Image 1 (cartoon, one colour):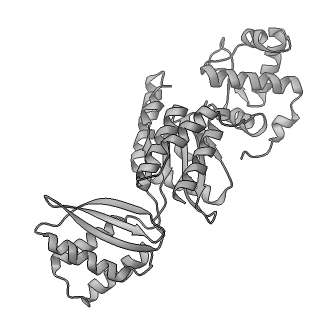
Image 2 (tube, rainbow, N blue to C red):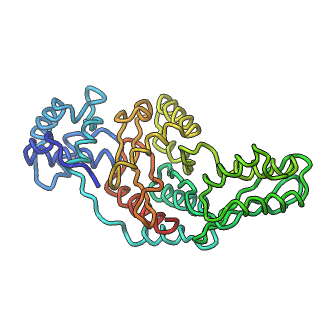
Image 3 (cartoon, rainbow, N blue to C red):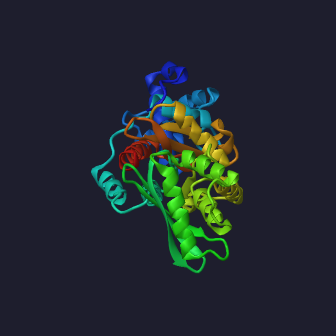
Length: 351
């Protein structure tokens, strides 16, 4: 789940590791600089403030701590947070109440994939107090049936059924002048092309035939077919990104410059392209991945961290990723098992 111990951590003596661990845990809890007197009162083994200050100075020299003000306590640097995650973090199991809440919200009966994923990351966002995000799987299943249902006022419901029983729906804005009879003809034409093919295969075959005019469909019906296929199309090399709970990112904002950094992150969330590239890393990694601050260019300005895990289908192939974005001082010990468990639940439901 987490990379092996860093040489820096293993080279510290037991006292230094314990002081460093308490500093990071206090910072995660409060977000404030941690002073030697505070640590002296809270350490299980009594150490004088002077002794603690000497150790803190050594840790600062190693680049694991810094002091935001001359008279302030210490905060972990980005390197310090990474060293803590790699070498000192203890990750436990997910509490039963949080496990039950995730299970309850992620039930799939009667829901589309988007609804399952939306409720999963909504629950994950609420429990973690972070922004939740998920890369939805591309439709690679063999298809059984596709139908256009007339809704009136220039709109139709496109229903897609896979051979293993998955049902997906999309609302389609129809070309002007389309009548219900054109929807029936378009449904019949596409179902003639399906025959156990994937959506990409159907799209390629149908659009090729339409281009060559092998089927005598009227112009409006052709446009319905093209529009219906396009509702599941998009960029074939990318999967859609769904984000929930961005407002949680504002809870840790304490200054105008912090607000500006979060604003830039919101813009990145809206474009989503950089997140999709970042989440591609889960395709070549096992288990939960952790990105802290400028370890990735996306978070270099915002100072945020991300915890993300892939989810898999029944053949153990990675089909998407789910995770959270929050401040650099994420409660990793609590949120890592939360993300990991949610990814496994989502994989079981839609895989």
